[in-house]
Length: 106
Image 1 (tube, rainbow, N blue to C red):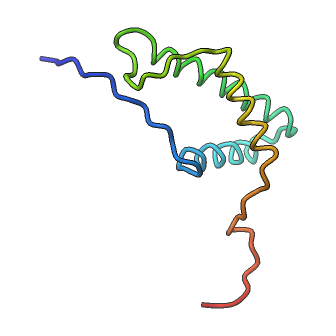
Image 2: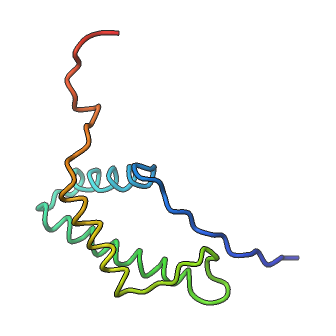
């Protein structure tokens, strides 16, 4: 016997979250396995984000969709995505501990 489960609300990941790190790692790992020119690799990533948006939008449609309250609006959502891209381009890079020079020993 199966029971209907209420829709699970989606949660926005915090800045610098596991999702951010996983995406970054997957991107660079893929480029190391199959080198592409930088702009071509970013175009592939953009198409992937578009496909992911469509999948998420579909998961939010109808009465059985996600209960978080977000209603997909491709026009305004694209503006938000573009603004986030622009903001990330203008934001200075955060320090990466893996690339910092050690100043002493513990």
